[in-house]
Amino acid sequence: MGDQKALTQPRLGAHMSIAGGLEKALLRGQTLGCTTIQLFTKNSNQWKERVLEKSEIQLFRELREQTGIDPVISHASYLINLASPDEEMYAKSLDAMVHEIRRCEQLGIDYIVVHPGFHKGRGEGWGIGRITEALDAIHADTAGSRVRVALETTAGQGSALGGSLEEIARIIERVKENSRLVFCLDTCHMFVAGYDLRTQQNYLDLFREIDDTTGREKLRVIHLNDSKREMGSRVDRHEDIGEGMIGEGLFRLIMGDISLAGVSKIIETPGDIENLQLLKSFA
Image (cartoon, rainbow, N blue to C red):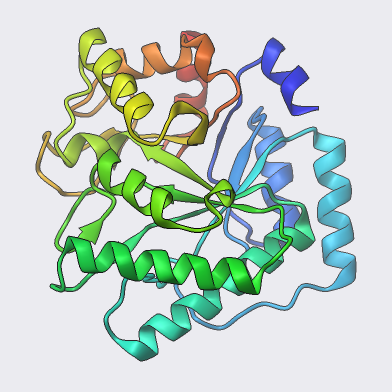
């Protein structure tokens, strides 16, 4: 279903609220004309887990079929830190991620986006090793799952890992079942981490680096966000498309790139309707 849709209209959507029920995210997305959406499967700022009712799962799956929204992407809790040096936090993060994947499996969600984590001063090499061990353990606990984890590029703030494509690639390369890993490119994060994305040549250079590191086949999600802050600031503040420091050029290139037709493009910006309309006009 998804591959056929990609030929006729862009895989474009937004992060949708689940207020009132998970299925509401699908209905809100349909109202906005989304062909793909992102959501949380629980409160993103609490450790407390959700147990899904059979009726809730059935309704979500039925509405997904009816709306034709494909793929559906989940974003993991912001509390998860797969690189934490604190043993209690690390254990809670692994357990939470396992529950996130199991919920996605129940709902038929394809990808779950997660921030790689913070090494808290232990260093990049140590942190990447810690994340690798975490993902190996998570994969072991969710053996057979079709849900793929999408490591999100970060703004590189503080001890955050994933601020470069090279770091994302190193994590993927070291994980045993790395066929279960993909990655999510966030335009705002990349820009404030130091990637200049404002010209066509910069765009070509970015994708040349993707080809040389992770490989383009691993790019399954793009978060389309302009930036309130300047390049290299390492400050993650999203802005409406074309209203920030990046400008319209990058987003025109992404929406017009046929090689990205099968990649889900998700906005996480304030003006959903206006941003979606603008991006559709670039396609």
